Image (tube, rainbow, N blue to C red; front, side):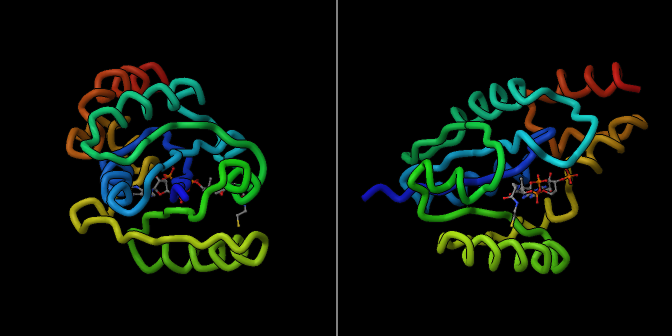
Length: 165
Ligand code: COA
């Protein structure tokens, strides 16, 4: 049976840290669904849901892998979405002990509710301090974020930051 995993998040914007997790997870699964949460509690998104899905599809094409990658949005509980996609696992990237503690709670809850396991991958050290919010804040004040945002979306990201400022 195909091993399908869900890699969920807000991806506003997607960072090189996310891409690195997708690349690494692609060696483990036959298919990865990059799942953008529609009902994320985060307010004031920089990119619309459709824009993020387009960006994720476009960036997936540049990942060299035999694993099928596709971007989808989901509403409601992650595990319900995972079940509809016949996923056997959830993939999460952890950057530090704080992330790990937060993930521990979600892992136990998701497994309690569904039996679905979560695979945690530690972010590479050079990207372990990156978050989408931090990158947005640094860019807003003119800092160089080119090491953290995929080059394909950097121009539109900077335009959007300028418009929002
Ligand atoms: N490299 C760089 N940054 C990373 C990263 C990586 N490898 N992994 C995560 N991040 C950053 C993200 O950019 C994000 O930054 P931000 O907070 O500044 O936007 C931050 O870490 C948190 O990311 P993440 O943990 O993926 O959270 P999220 O808000 O993007 O997504 C959901 C959380 C959608 C997975 C979770 O809320 C969910 O499952 N919701 C559905 C409802 C549900 O099922 N709830 C019950 C859960 S038990």
